[in-house]
Picture 1 (cartoon, helix red, strand yellow):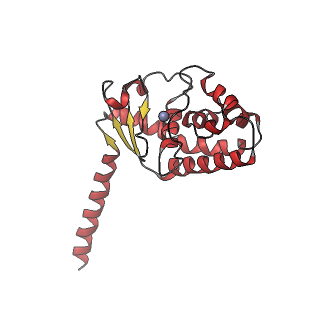
Picture 2: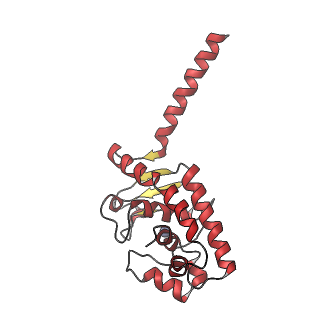
Picture 3: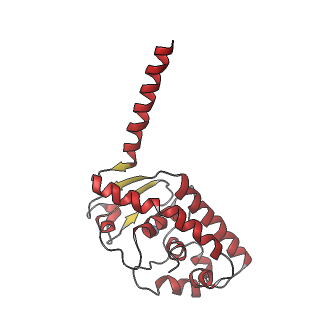
Length: 189
Ligand SMILES: [Zn+2]
């Protein structure tokens, strides 16, 4: 009986070790390390930004004129980003530059309406304009349907420094549903 239990336990541990491999698809060991390191910073960075939610200069910069309703929405979405960064283990798929997910010179992508599957483009491993790789992953987490579910992109900070600043000024309701505004707010840019 004891021997049978031991065999079962060995099988269980072997299965859990095999499982951790499925977190990456088509990535080299070096790419896996780069992604893993960037992702490991996401939780603490998002958590540290919580204190700036409210009528603060940082909030107003990225989410526009303060209202209680919008603050509540930002709190809700930020909590979802923090929770996902802490407990979710997305599947990271390393794609080639010609893969449909990587067209338009993207760093990474998540299909709208999905969660936990992140397409990583070759550009992710180079210099990230106006940010860093952890920020890119925070942007993608903001897309997760089972989470912040921030919807379609309304601006990209990488297009130009004012792209998402302008959105916050002209359309705060869009800014509080814009993945890149969460990235920039969390990054305290
Ligand atoms: Zn996006």
